Length: 240
Length: 240
Image (cartoon, rainbow over all chains, first blue to last red; front, side, top):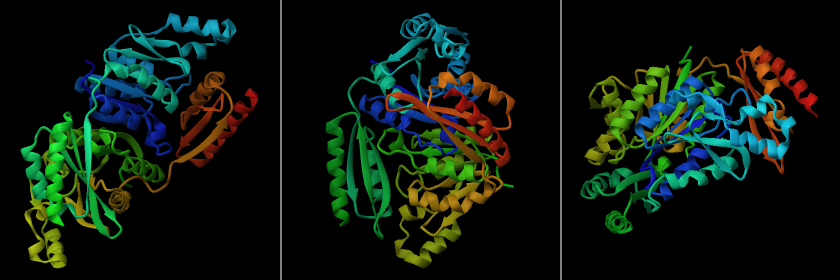
Protein backbone atom coordinates (compact mmCIF):
# COMPACT_ATOMS: atom_id res chain seq x y z
CA UNK A 1 0.00 0.00 0.00
CA UNK A 2 1.24 3.46 -0.90
CA UNK A 3 0.70 6.75 0.92
CA UNK A 4 -2.95 6.98 2.03
CA UNK A 5 -2.94 10.79 2.10
CA UNK A 6 -1.19 13.38 -0.04
CA UNK A 7 -0.59 17.09 -0.43
CA UNK A 8 0.52 18.97 -3.54
CA UNK A 9 2.82 22.00 -3.38
CA UNK A 10 3.05 24.10 -6.54
CA UNK A 11 6.04 26.42 -6.68
CA UNK A 12 5.67 29.30 -9.07
CA UNK A 13 5.55 33.08 -9.14
CA UNK A 14 3.95 32.76 -12.58
CA UNK A 15 0.81 31.24 -11.04
CA UNK A 16 0.58 33.71 -8.14
CA UNK A 17 0.88 36.61 -10.60
CA UNK A 18 -1.96 35.23 -12.72
CA UNK A 19 0.26 34.72 -15.76
CA UNK A 20 -0.26 30.96 -15.78
CA UNK A 21 -3.22 28.85 -14.71
CA UNK A 22 -2.15 25.77 -12.78
CA UNK A 23 -2.51 22.50 -14.64
CA UNK A 24 -0.18 20.24 -12.64
CA UNK A 25 -2.04 20.22 -9.32
CA UNK A 26 -5.26 19.50 -11.22
CA UNK A 27 -3.65 16.54 -12.98
CA UNK A 28 -2.20 15.24 -9.70
CA UNK A 29 -5.64 15.57 -8.04
CA UNK A 30 -7.22 13.44 -10.78
CA UNK A 31 -4.49 10.80 -10.71
CA UNK A 32 -4.47 10.54 -6.89
CA UNK A 33 -8.28 10.18 -6.87
CA UNK A 34 -7.95 7.36 -9.39
CA UNK A 35 -5.59 5.56 -7.02
CA UNK A 36 -7.74 6.04 -3.92
CA UNK A 37 -5.26 8.42 -2.28
CA UNK A 38 -6.87 11.28 -0.35
CA UNK A 39 -5.55 14.70 -1.37
CA UNK A 40 -5.67 16.86 1.77
CA UNK A 41 -4.39 20.18 0.43
CA UNK A 42 -2.97 22.01 -2.58
CA UNK A 43 -0.73 24.99 -1.82
CA UNK A 44 0.83 27.40 -4.30
CA UNK A 45 3.80 29.45 -3.11
CA UNK A 46 6.45 31.72 -4.67
CA UNK A 47 10.01 30.83 -5.76
CA UNK A 48 11.45 31.59 -2.30
CA UNK A 49 13.64 29.04 -0.53
CA UNK A 50 12.42 29.71 3.01
CA UNK A 51 8.74 29.72 2.08
CA UNK A 52 9.10 26.51 0.05
CA UNK A 53 11.04 24.76 2.83
CA UNK A 54 8.47 25.79 5.47
CA UNK A 55 5.61 24.67 3.21
CA UNK A 56 7.24 21.28 2.60
CA UNK A 57 7.60 20.76 6.36
CA UNK A 58 4.04 21.91 7.08
CA UNK A 59 2.44 19.72 4.41
CA UNK A 60 4.61 16.68 5.16
CA UNK A 61 3.48 16.90 8.81
CA UNK A 62 -0.13 16.60 7.60
CA UNK A 63 0.11 14.18 4.67
CA UNK A 64 1.90 10.86 4.17
CA UNK A 65 3.26 11.97 0.80
CA UNK A 66 3.92 15.42 -0.68
CA UNK A 67 4.29 16.09 -4.41
CA UNK A 68 5.92 19.37 -5.44
CA UNK A 69 5.79 20.93 -8.90
CA UNK A 70 8.26 23.44 -10.33
CA UNK A 71 11.49 25.20 -9.46
CA UNK A 72 13.73 22.46 -10.86
CA UNK A 73 16.22 23.58 -13.46
CA UNK A 74 19.41 25.56 -14.01
CA UNK A 75 18.20 29.16 -13.59
CA UNK A 76 18.43 31.38 -10.51
CA UNK A 77 14.67 31.08 -9.85
CA UNK A 78 14.93 27.29 -9.59
CA UNK A 79 15.34 26.83 -5.84
CA UNK A 80 13.20 23.80 -5.00
CA UNK A 81 16.12 21.40 -4.52
CA UNK A 82 17.77 23.83 -2.13
CA UNK A 83 14.49 24.22 -0.21
CA UNK A 84 13.99 20.45 -0.10
CA UNK A 85 17.51 20.02 1.31
CA UNK A 86 16.78 22.71 3.90
CA UNK A 87 13.47 21.11 4.86
CA UNK A 88 15.29 17.86 5.67
CA UNK A 89 18.43 19.49 7.10
CA UNK A 90 20.77 17.90 4.58
CA UNK A 91 23.23 19.45 2.09
CA UNK A 92 22.77 19.56 -1.67
CA UNK A 93 25.17 17.19 -3.38
CA UNK A 94 25.94 16.42 -7.01
CA UNK A 95 24.29 13.20 -8.05
CA UNK A 96 27.15 11.19 -9.54
CA UNK A 97 25.01 8.98 -11.80
CA UNK A 98 23.26 12.01 -13.30
CA UNK A 99 26.60 13.71 -13.99
CA UNK A 100 27.87 10.49 -15.59
CA UNK A 101 24.75 10.25 -17.73
CA UNK A 102 25.11 13.89 -18.86
CA UNK A 103 28.82 13.39 -19.63
CA UNK A 104 28.15 10.24 -21.64
CA UNK A 105 25.42 11.93 -23.66
CA UNK A 106 26.82 15.43 -24.22
CA UNK A 107 30.58 15.20 -23.50
CA UNK A 108 32.70 16.90 -20.84
CA UNK A 109 32.69 20.33 -22.53
CA UNK A 110 28.91 20.57 -22.12
CA UNK A 111 29.15 20.34 -18.32
CA UNK A 112 29.20 24.04 -17.44
CA UNK A 113 28.50 25.08 -13.83
CA UNK A 114 24.88 25.92 -14.74
CA UNK A 115 24.39 22.47 -16.21
CA UNK A 116 26.07 20.73 -13.27
CA UNK A 117 23.59 22.64 -11.05
CA UNK A 118 20.79 20.57 -12.57
CA UNK A 119 22.35 17.39 -11.18
CA UNK A 120 22.27 18.47 -7.54
CA UNK A 121 19.95 16.59 -5.18
CA UNK A 122 19.46 16.69 -1.42
CA UNK A 123 21.85 14.19 0.18
CA UNK A 124 20.09 10.85 0.54
CA UNK A 125 17.42 11.62 -2.07
CA UNK A 126 16.55 9.19 -4.84
CA UNK A 127 16.46 10.65 -8.37
CA UNK A 128 13.10 10.60 -10.16
CA UNK A 129 13.82 9.85 -13.79
CA UNK A 130 11.62 9.98 -16.84
CA UNK A 131 12.13 9.63 -20.56
CA UNK A 132 11.63 13.35 -21.23
CA UNK A 133 14.60 14.96 -19.48
CA UNK A 134 18.04 14.43 -18.02
CA UNK A 135 17.21 16.66 -15.06
CA UNK A 136 16.06 14.36 -12.28
CA UNK A 137 13.34 15.02 -9.76
CA UNK A 138 14.09 14.00 -6.18
CA UNK A 139 12.35 11.77 -3.64
CA UNK A 140 13.25 12.00 0.02
CA UNK A 141 11.30 11.27 3.19
CA UNK A 142 7.90 11.06 1.50
CA UNK A 143 8.43 14.24 -0.55
CA UNK A 144 8.60 14.00 -4.34
CA UNK A 145 9.95 17.07 -6.17
CA UNK A 146 8.87 17.13 -9.81
CA UNK A 147 9.41 19.57 -12.68
CA UNK A 148 6.95 22.36 -13.47
CA UNK A 149 6.87 21.98 -17.27
CA UNK A 150 3.52 20.18 -17.68
CA UNK A 151 4.71 17.41 -20.04
CA UNK A 152 7.64 16.59 -17.76
CA UNK A 153 5.53 16.84 -14.59
CA UNK A 154 3.03 14.40 -16.09
CA UNK A 155 5.77 11.97 -17.07
CA UNK A 156 7.50 12.10 -13.67
CA UNK A 157 4.14 11.82 -11.88
CA UNK A 158 3.44 8.49 -13.58
CA UNK A 159 6.87 7.30 -12.41
CA UNK A 160 5.98 7.86 -8.72
CA UNK A 161 2.24 7.19 -8.59
CA UNK A 162 2.67 3.63 -7.37
CA UNK A 163 3.91 5.16 -4.10
CA UNK A 164 0.43 6.66 -3.56
CA UNK A 165 -2.87 5.01 -2.71
CA UNK A 166 -3.90 1.41 -2.90
CA UNK A 167 -4.51 1.18 -6.61
CA UNK A 168 -8.31 1.11 -6.45
CA UNK A 169 -9.97 4.36 -7.47
CA UNK A 170 -12.34 6.33 -5.32
CA UNK A 171 -15.81 6.29 -6.87
CA UNK A 172 -17.77 9.38 -7.89
CA UNK A 173 -21.31 9.65 -9.17
CA UNK A 174 -23.19 12.77 -10.15
CA UNK A 175 -26.87 13.61 -10.30
CA UNK A 176 -28.16 16.66 -12.14
CA UNK A 177 -30.84 18.65 -10.36
CA UNK A 178 -33.16 21.39 -11.70
CA UNK A 179 -33.86 23.21 -8.46
CA UNK A 180 -32.22 25.69 -6.10
CA UNK A 181 -30.14 24.18 -3.30
CA UNK A 182 -32.47 25.64 -0.70
CA UNK A 183 -35.24 23.35 -2.00
CA UNK A 184 -33.38 20.19 -0.97
CA UNK A 185 -30.73 21.27 1.56
CA UNK A 186 -32.51 19.73 4.55
CA UNK A 187 -33.29 16.45 2.79
CA UNK A 188 -29.69 16.19 1.56
CA UNK A 189 -28.29 16.90 5.04
CA UNK A 190 -30.44 14.08 6.43
CA UNK A 191 -29.16 11.73 3.72
CA UNK A 192 -25.55 12.67 4.48
CA UNK A 193 -26.17 12.07 8.21
CA UNK A 194 -27.61 8.61 7.45
CA UNK A 195 -24.67 7.74 5.15
CA UNK A 196 -21.41 8.86 6.74
CA UNK A 197 -19.60 6.22 4.65
CA UNK A 198 -19.85 8.50 1.59
CA UNK A 199 -19.38 12.21 1.05
CA UNK A 200 -22.20 14.17 -0.56
CA UNK A 201 -21.46 17.53 -2.18
CA UNK A 202 -23.80 20.01 -3.81
CA UNK A 203 -22.59 22.33 -6.60
CA UNK A 204 -25.13 24.91 -7.70
CA UNK A 205 -25.02 26.82 -10.95
CA UNK A 206 -27.42 28.51 -13.36
CA UNK A 207 -29.08 26.85 -16.34
CA UNK A 208 -30.16 29.94 -18.24
CA UNK A 209 -32.24 31.96 -15.81
CA UNK A 210 -33.07 29.01 -13.55
CA UNK A 211 -31.06 27.59 -10.67
CA UNK A 212 -29.74 24.08 -11.24
CA UNK A 213 -26.73 22.09 -10.11
CA UNK A 214 -25.00 18.79 -9.49
CA UNK A 215 -25.12 16.55 -6.45
CA UNK A 216 -21.91 14.54 -6.20
CA UNK A 217 -21.48 11.34 -4.18
CA UNK A 218 -17.93 10.18 -3.47
CA UNK A 219 -16.87 7.02 -1.68
CA UNK A 220 -14.64 3.98 -1.65
CA UNK A 221 -17.22 1.28 -2.34
CA UNK A 222 -19.15 1.38 -5.66
CA UNK A 223 -22.13 -0.42 -4.11
CA UNK A 224 -22.41 2.06 -1.24
CA UNK A 225 -22.21 4.97 -3.67
CA UNK A 226 -24.85 3.40 -5.94
CA UNK A 227 -27.16 2.86 -2.98
CA UNK A 228 -26.93 6.49 -1.89
CA UNK A 229 -27.33 7.60 -5.48
CA UNK A 230 -30.66 5.76 -5.69
CA UNK A 231 -31.87 7.48 -2.52
CA UNK A 232 -30.84 10.91 -3.77
CA UNK A 233 -32.50 10.30 -7.14
CA UNK A 234 -35.74 9.49 -5.32
CA UNK A 235 -35.41 12.68 -3.29
CA UNK A 236 -34.72 14.74 -6.43
CA UNK A 237 -37.76 13.25 -8.22
CA UNK A 238 -39.96 14.21 -5.27
CA UNK A 239 -38.98 17.85 -5.89
CA UNK A 240 -40.44 17.92 -9.40
CA UNK B 1 -4.10 52.24 0.16
CA UNK B 2 -5.57 48.74 0.38
CA UNK B 3 -3.98 45.54 1.61
CA UNK B 4 -0.42 45.29 0.22
CA UNK B 5 -0.32 41.49 0.44
CA UNK B 6 -2.99 38.85 -0.03
CA UNK B 7 -3.64 35.13 0.19
CA UNK B 8 -6.41 33.13 -1.46
CA UNK B 9 -8.07 30.15 0.21
CA UNK B 10 -10.19 27.91 -2.03
CA UNK B 11 -12.58 25.64 -0.18
CA UNK B 12 -13.72 22.65 -2.15
CA UNK B 13 -13.63 18.87 -2.12
CA UNK B 14 -14.49 19.01 -5.82
CA UNK B 15 -11.11 20.54 -6.62
CA UNK B 16 -9.09 18.20 -4.40
CA UNK B 17 -10.80 15.20 -6.01
CA UNK B 18 -9.91 16.46 -9.48
CA UNK B 19 -13.55 16.86 -10.51
CA UNK B 20 -13.21 20.61 -11.02
CA UNK B 21 -10.26 22.72 -12.11
CA UNK B 22 -9.94 25.89 -10.06
CA UNK B 23 -10.87 29.08 -11.88
CA UNK B 24 -11.49 31.46 -8.97
CA UNK B 25 -7.97 31.59 -7.52
CA UNK B 26 -6.64 32.17 -11.03
CA UNK B 27 -9.03 35.09 -11.55
CA UNK B 28 -8.14 36.55 -8.14
CA UNK B 29 -4.42 36.24 -8.97
CA UNK B 30 -4.92 38.23 -12.17
CA UNK B 31 -7.06 40.91 -10.54
CA UNK B 32 -4.70 41.33 -7.55
CA UNK B 33 -1.71 41.63 -9.92
CA UNK B 34 -3.58 44.34 -11.82
CA UNK B 35 -3.99 46.27 -8.56
CA UNK B 36 -0.38 45.91 -7.45
CA UNK B 37 -1.26 43.63 -4.52
CA UNK B 38 1.25 40.85 -3.90
CA UNK B 39 -0.37 37.40 -3.73
CA UNK B 40 1.70 35.37 -1.25
CA UNK B 41 -0.08 32.02 -1.37
CA UNK B 42 -3.03 30.09 -2.75
CA UNK B 43 -4.27 27.18 -0.64
CA UNK B 44 -6.99 24.69 -1.51
CA UNK B 45 -8.56 22.74 1.36
CA UNK B 46 -11.57 20.44 1.87
CA UNK B 47 -15.05 21.33 3.19
CA UNK B 48 -14.02 20.73 6.82
CA UNK B 49 -14.68 23.39 9.47
CA UNK B 50 -11.53 22.85 11.51
CA UNK B 51 -9.21 22.76 8.50
CA UNK B 52 -10.79 25.88 7.01
CA UNK B 53 -10.62 27.78 10.31
CA UNK B 54 -6.96 26.83 10.82
CA UNK B 55 -6.13 27.80 7.23
CA UNK B 56 -7.83 31.19 7.61
CA UNK B 57 -5.80 31.87 10.76
CA UNK B 58 -2.55 30.71 9.17
CA UNK B 59 -2.98 32.75 5.98
CA UNK B 60 -4.26 35.85 7.78
CA UNK B 61 -1.11 35.77 9.95
CA UNK B 62 0.98 35.98 6.74
CA UNK B 63 -1.07 38.26 4.50
CA UNK B 64 -2.85 41.58 5.07
CA UNK B 65 -5.98 40.35 3.32
CA UNK B 66 -7.36 36.85 2.72
CA UNK B 67 -9.96 36.02 0.07
CA UNK B 68 -11.82 32.73 0.42
CA UNK B 69 -13.84 31.02 -2.30
CA UNK B 70 -16.61 28.48 -1.78
CA UNK B 71 -18.59 26.82 0.96
CA UNK B 72 -21.26 29.51 1.15
CA UNK B 73 -24.82 28.33 0.71
CA UNK B 74 -27.61 26.37 2.33
CA UNK B 75 -26.37 22.77 2.06
CA UNK B 76 -24.60 20.69 4.72
CA UNK B 77 -21.26 20.96 2.89
CA UNK B 78 -21.34 24.77 3.09
CA UNK B 79 -19.33 25.39 6.28
CA UNK B 80 -17.19 28.42 5.46
CA UNK B 81 -19.22 30.90 7.55
CA UNK B 82 -18.97 28.58 10.56
CA UNK B 83 -15.21 28.23 10.02
CA UNK B 84 -14.81 32.00 9.65
CA UNK B 85 -16.70 32.55 12.92
CA UNK B 86 -14.49 29.96 14.62
CA UNK B 87 -11.32 31.56 13.24
CA UNK B 88 -12.30 34.86 14.86
CA UNK B 89 -13.85 33.34 18.00
CA UNK B 90 -17.27 34.86 17.40
CA UNK B 91 -20.71 33.24 17.05
CA UNK B 92 -22.68 32.96 13.82
CA UNK B 93 -25.67 35.29 13.87
CA UNK B 94 -28.53 35.91 11.49
CA UNK B 95 -27.94 39.05 9.48
CA UNK B 96 -31.14 41.04 10.01
CA UNK B 97 -30.89 43.10 6.82
CA UNK B 98 -30.41 40.00 4.70
CA UNK B 99 -33.42 38.32 6.31
CA UNK B 100 -35.46 41.48 5.71
CA UNK B 101 -34.35 41.57 2.07
CA UNK B 102 -35.27 37.90 1.57
CA UNK B 103 -38.65 38.43 3.26
CA UNK B 104 -39.43 41.48 1.14
CA UNK B 105 -38.53 39.65 -2.07
CA UNK B 106 -39.91 36.16 -1.50
CA UNK B 107 -42.40 36.48 1.38
CA UNK B 108 -42.39 34.93 4.85
CA UNK B 109 -43.39 31.44 3.68
CA UNK B 110 -40.17 31.14 1.67
CA UNK B 111 -38.00 31.54 4.78
CA UNK B 112 -37.45 27.89 5.67
CA UNK B 113 -34.63 26.99 8.12
CA UNK B 114 -32.34 26.05 5.19
CA UNK B 115 -32.91 29.44 3.58
CA UNK B 116 -32.45 31.32 6.86
CA UNK B 117 -29.10 29.48 7.13
CA UNK B 118 -27.88 31.44 4.10
CA UNK B 119 -28.29 34.71 6.02
CA UNK B 120 -25.94 33.78 8.89
CA UNK B 121 -22.71 35.72 9.20
CA UNK B 122 -19.98 35.78 11.84
CA UNK B 123 -20.90 38.37 14.47
CA UNK B 124 -19.34 41.71 13.52
CA UNK B 125 -18.86 40.79 9.84
CA UNK B 126 -19.95 43.09 7.03
CA UNK B 127 -22.04 41.46 4.27
CA UNK B 128 -20.50 41.38 0.79
CA UNK B 129 -23.33 41.99 -1.64
CA UNK B 130 -23.50 41.71 -5.39
CA UNK B 131 -26.22 41.87 -7.99
CA UNK B 132 -26.17 38.13 -8.65
CA UNK B 133 -27.40 36.64 -5.38
CA UNK B 134 -29.21 37.29 -2.13
CA UNK B 135 -26.68 35.19 -0.22
CA UNK B 136 -24.09 37.58 1.13
CA UNK B 137 -20.38 36.99 1.44
CA UNK B 138 -18.77 38.18 4.66
CA UNK B 139 -15.87 40.49 5.47
CA UNK B 140 -14.30 40.42 8.91
CA UNK B 141 -10.82 41.29 10.15
CA UNK B 142 -9.20 41.36 6.71
CA UNK B 143 -10.84 38.09 5.57
CA UNK B 144 -13.33 38.18 2.71
CA UNK B 145 -15.48 35.06 2.26
CA UNK B 146 -16.88 34.83 -1.26
CA UNK B 147 -19.03 32.26 -3.07
CA UNK B 148 -17.57 29.40 -5.11
CA UNK B 149 -19.85 29.62 -8.16
CA UNK B 150 -17.50 31.35 -10.62
CA UNK B 151 -19.95 34.03 -11.85
CA UNK B 152 -20.86 34.99 -8.28
CA UNK B 153 -17.23 34.85 -7.09
CA UNK B 154 -16.23 37.20 -9.92
CA UNK B 155 -19.04 39.62 -9.11
CA UNK B 156 -18.27 39.65 -5.35
CA UNK B 157 -14.53 39.95 -6.06
CA UNK B 158 -15.09 43.21 -7.97
CA UNK B 159 -17.06 44.48 -4.98
CA UNK B 160 -14.08 44.08 -2.60
CA UNK B 161 -11.06 44.70 -4.87
CA UNK B 162 -10.72 48.32 -3.79
CA UNK B 163 -9.63 46.94 -0.39
CA UNK B 164 -6.55 45.41 -2.07
CA UNK B 165 -3.46 47.04 -3.53
CA UNK B 166 -2.83 50.63 -4.45
CA UNK B 167 -4.65 50.68 -7.73
CA UNK B 168 -1.56 50.73 -9.98
CA UNK B 169 -0.85 47.41 -11.67
CA UNK B 170 2.37 45.49 -11.39
CA UNK B 171 4.13 45.42 -14.76
CA UNK B 172 5.08 42.25 -16.62
CA UNK B 173 7.08 41.89 -19.83
CA UNK B 174 7.99 38.69 -21.64
CA UNK B 175 10.80 37.79 -23.99
CA UNK B 176 10.71 34.64 -26.11
CA UNK B 177 13.94 32.69 -26.28
CA UNK B 178 14.98 29.88 -28.66
CA UNK B 179 17.57 28.17 -26.47
CA UNK B 180 17.77 25.80 -23.52
CA UNK B 181 17.84 27.46 -20.08
CA UNK B 182 21.31 26.08 -19.44
CA UNK B 183 22.67 28.28 -22.27
CA UNK B 184 21.79 31.52 -20.45
CA UNK B 185 21.29 30.58 -16.77
CA UNK B 186 24.53 32.21 -15.60
CA UNK B 187 24.00 35.41 -17.61
CA UNK B 188 20.42 35.68 -16.35
CA UNK B 189 21.47 35.13 -12.73
CA UNK B 190 23.99 37.97 -13.09
CA UNK B 191 21.27 40.24 -14.52
CA UNK B 192 18.94 39.39 -11.64
CA UNK B 193 21.71 40.13 -9.13
CA UNK B 194 22.32 43.54 -10.76
CA UNK B 195 18.58 44.36 -10.78
CA UNK B 196 17.03 43.35 -7.47
CA UNK B 197 14.28 45.94 -8.10
CA UNK B 198 12.60 43.53 -10.56
CA UNK B 199 11.94 39.78 -10.52
CA UNK B 200 13.19 37.73 -13.45
CA UNK B 201 11.66 34.30 -14.10
CA UNK B 202 12.52 31.72 -16.73
CA UNK B 203 9.85 29.32 -18.06
CA UNK B 204 11.21 26.64 -20.39
CA UNK B 205 9.14 24.58 -22.79
CA UNK B 206 9.55 22.74 -26.09
CA UNK B 207 8.98 24.26 -29.53
CA UNK B 208 8.70 21.09 -31.53
CA UNK B 209 11.87 19.13 -30.83
CA UNK B 210 13.87 22.17 -29.69
CA UNK B 211 14.05 23.75 -26.27
CA UNK B 212 12.62 27.25 -26.05
CA UNK B 213 10.94 29.33 -23.39
CA UNK B 214 9.90 32.68 -21.98
CA UNK B 215 11.85 35.05 -19.78
CA UNK B 216 9.47 37.12 -17.68
CA UNK B 217 10.32 40.41 -15.96
CA UNK B 218 7.96 41.65 -13.24
CA UNK B 219 8.20 44.90 -11.32
CA UNK B 220 6.43 47.96 -10.04
CA UNK B 221 7.99 50.59 -12.30
CA UNK B 222 7.44 50.33 -16.10
CA UNK B 223 10.72 52.14 -16.81
CA UNK B 224 12.77 49.78 -14.64
CA UNK B 225 11.13 46.78 -16.28
CA UNK B 226 11.76 48.21 -19.76
CA UNK B 227 15.43 48.85 -18.91
CA UNK B 228 15.97 45.26 -17.75
CA UNK B 229 14.05 43.98 -20.76
CA UNK B 230 16.51 45.77 -23.08
CA UNK B 231 19.47 44.18 -21.30
CA UNK B 232 17.93 40.72 -21.47
CA UNK B 233 17.13 41.15 -25.16
CA UNK B 234 20.77 41.97 -25.80
CA UNK B 235 21.84 38.90 -23.85
CA UNK B 236 19.39 36.70 -25.78
CA UNK B 237 20.62 38.07 -29.13
CA UNK B 238 24.20 37.21 -28.16
CA UNK B 239 23.11 33.55 -27.87
CA UNK B 240 22.08 33.31 -31.50
